[in-house]
Image 1 (cartoon, rainbow, N blue to C red):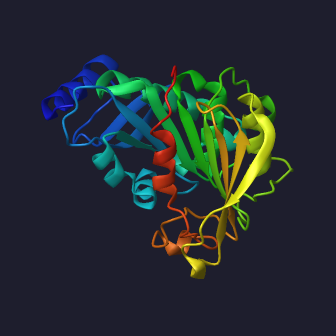
Image 2 (cartoon, one colour):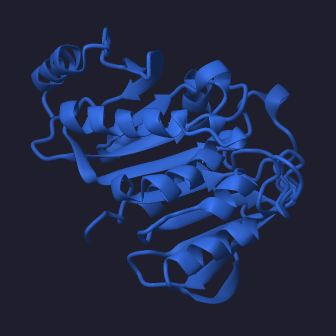
Length: 294
């Protein structure tokens, strides 16, 4: 992907979509259903003569794309590994999945099409991750747009009960879930009330059933490389085909946090941050081998 091609791509977005602007190659605005939606974008500077992957990273409730970028630090990995990262903004810093809405899902699917058409993105290697409210959106997108997504990796975000009970996914999709057992915002064991959430184990089991996996799972305790952080991590792995695995990283003692980044906005950190794993690296290592139509 050459610098000149990036400029041409931006012009094409302006001309074809009309409601999209790209003033510094790292910002998009897209009109969807009469509403201007925004997205920060990272495009690697290296040249690629072939389509490259796309990672969409969805921010938590009350945060925005800039803060998601800061929390996950995907840009450095994307530059080194060669993939595009999109950091969209929800309306009023939230995603409507919690209230049964579909407008944000339409925005994300439109964004995927724009990036495929204008940024040399491989349509078979589009991945979605998110934190908290953004993690909930991962589940919704897997339910309603699996034909566009190669894998999801929600962190501290389980599906709201309406999504959980009304999911109509017709395809297998690789899923990796990271969730702390001491999460007081989106509890690991779920919140079965109005506007409640599924538990993390139930969400993992749902996707295992969807993917035709065996429902038995193995539990492996990972190395406690940061013994002073007050957490340990178990990997719960279902018996699935290689192409469509379902993994649950249970962060024992972990709070409503992004593992591996203890320095991010401590005033917005609820509970212990596990340093035994780095969620960003773990997510990319999971994504990088997955593709639609393998």
